[in-house]
Image 1 (cartoon, one colour):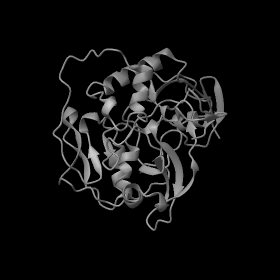
Image 2 (cartoon, helix red, strand yellow; image 1 turned 45 degrees about the vertical axis):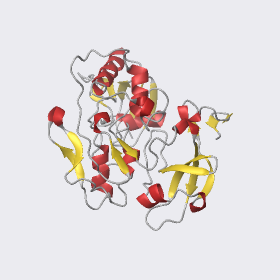
Image 3 (spheres, rainbow, N blue to C red; image 1 turned 90 degrees about the vertical axis):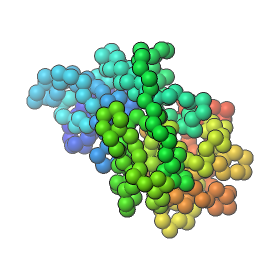
Length: 310
């Protein structure tokens, strides 16, 4: 099994493991951000460039450094490889440049966006963003289209990570939406309006790293940090039935799939569980969900040790 050293920390990983996943096994601040990579979606990664790292030593057999920064989500580990992530100033500068590029057309409407508080681009902007933009041209805008009764599309917020397209390809029996046009005119769209109605189509909301795809049934109802996320399950014939119910008092405001600490879903849920089962009697509530104490969602809740008890 190959060994890799990332920011001075060495770990042994399975053959074929990427630098990003090796960093995730180590954990901590050295883990590169990822806006397009999604471990449960085949073909994802290599598009947003936020996970750039510097390989200072290729391997034991070939110790030469790689000449350019590489995307850690697409670069496999070699035995003896040494990688600089957050410890290299050029990597931090590159991530800041990528963040600036992603924000060129983004409307920055966080105060009214339902994704606020759990947005990966918001985290990137906080860590690497600049106070002012250098962009002098008009921001890209799109005509609003209706893609269905449950999902709201805000194309102006989209960063073209392609996650929702891969989700539709791999979870839904018929793909009815995708990328149309090219270059700076490319957009997520459907060929026929109101056509997204697959039983698993709601998962595009969970995989979207920004607020481009949001839940119509939860739209403008509450901020996530005012709600209590609770692990819950139900006997569902279509999916695993394991979800997170976001409650305010005894009322369920929204239902989402369970995400890991990197914001990825491993058990996707169906639209019936997500959109139609909002009664407390529909679910067996297991208990409060563990939330990273640095997350805004954990604010105003009791803390116990390093875990947040809600």
